[in-house]
Length: 188
Image (spheres, rainbow, N blue to C red):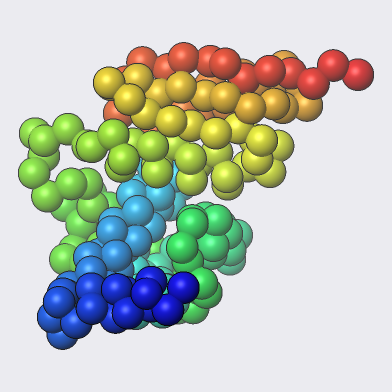
């Protein structure tokens, strides 16, 4: 066992002092991208300019303006449901004057991919679908996987209506990919 510790220490030293910081920064950027994509994909919240920052301990700060307290609470709920998020400090302002975006979002706001013609990666689509499913408690038993431009849903739900809702959520967030429904309904 001591040999493993020595090997691990050697691997860390060989990686150099900057490697850990780069990996951590990439993880923060990936988490932030997932958060923003989740907010964009929500039919209500996606209309507003929202910003998110992630620190080295996966704590998230949300900023922007929304028209209702319910929308602010929904933003917190969606972000907390994302794997890897440790805590959410929701600093979004509630204001009846908050207006939906008309075309271009301000810098740092939830916006689509930087290259408009580039399709999202399978991992991005999978994260968006999975996070949208997690936002609905009745769909907690459904898992989405993406491969070869196809979203596959598996798991078990309590009713046919929940199965149909899972498929609808997947189609909405699948970025034009096909959806394969392998969700089972629990029998009483």
